[in-house]
Every structure is written in C-alpha cells, then in structure tokens.
Image (tube, rainbow, N blue to C red; front, side):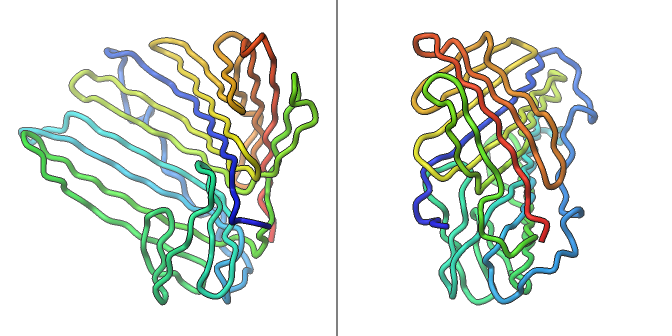
Length: 272
C-alpha cells in the first residue's frame, strides 16, 4: 500500500445542539472510549507496522472566583494503519491529504502530536495537564492519548461505495476511521452542545464533509468532490457499529443541478 500519497479524507459530523436554557446533566456528556475490547491480540513486536486503534480525551475547564463556568470535552477513537520499516514509518490520516510521519527517538515516538514511550512496538500511553494563564479566569486542560496494535496487516480495512449521478459504481478503500464527540457545557446558563463526528480517510483525491445540526435549528450539508448538498433529502444514518465494524449510509440531494448522491461506508477491522 502506498501511504506516501494520501489524497482523500471524508468527514462526517452529527451535531446535537440544545439552545440556551435547555437543561444539561451528566447524562448528556459523552462517555470516554476505551481500549478494553482490543487487548490480548497476538501481534509482531519487531515493528510498528500494522493496524492500530487509539483513544484520546481532552477536557478544558474554565473557572473564575473559584467557580467553574464552562467546560469543553473532546473524545475520539481512531482506527489507522502504520506502514514502513527501520526508523521510517507513516501513519494514515483521517483528515488530510497525506499520511503523517511517525517521529522516533529511541523508544520514544510521536503520533498525532502525542509523545510517549512505545512498549514492544505494541502499545503507547501518554497524559498531561496544562494551566494556561489568562487574565480574569482560570483554565485547566487535561488530556490523554492511548494506542494499541491489533493486527500486523497494513491493508485498508474499509470501503466507501457511491451511487447516483456521476458516481454510480465508484468505490474507494478506507485506511483511517475516526469517531468522536465534542461537548461544550455552560454552567451559568445550564446549556450544552454535543457534537458527534466521523472522519474517514480514503485513498484517492478529493474530500467529503457532512454536518448535521438539530435542536436549536436544523441544517444539513454534505460537501463531496467540490459539490454541496443541502437540507431536504440529505442525511446520515448509522446502521450498525461495534468495536470492530461500522456501517454508515449517506445521502446527498438538492445539490448542483439537482443531482443525487448515495453512499455507504463499511468498516471491518482485521481479526488478527
């Protein structure tokens, strides 16, 4: 697989927006992802190359006069491929046109901006806390990043299929898949925003972006191959998902000259 040229990313996001005044509670806050379902795989410890799963979490808490008034919470789970040899490895990307280089310094590596000690080329964990200085309020950021190799395979693990005007029969393989939530809560107004995000990296040129808002207002937009599909008839449907498999349908309508696009994304992680 050629990881040096990576020129498609697909971003899907579903947003649940509750207008100011809507009640917030811990039940609205998304739960962090875990690697518990990926432990115990029999994988090669001689190389980083393989299929990996990572989970990350970042919490920003803003407070003043010893009382918290706003929180930002960002969690993600990502499936990706690392390929290469020696000290030169490349990670597939879910969001940009090229893979990212794995920076290596002995047993210390940097992935997605997170630096830590790699254990037997199979596992990494890192965490940190920062307290930026701002005038008038306190800001505390805590974050963690954890990843585990689940397979020695460096092949794509998913498929995007499109039908409709100009796309009938178009297929692209998937080598990066990310799902996550961005949560924002304002304690002063007892309101929150919860945004669900899917980002899928593909092998070829162009990009797809989907945004869906509901609650305070409704609005859906899909940008695909330079075209935009808006509102009525545009949708994203999560058919099924588990720790190892996902099925997502997307529909875009009311685009340029009334064109219609339909698609399906199927993800299946390797078993070993």
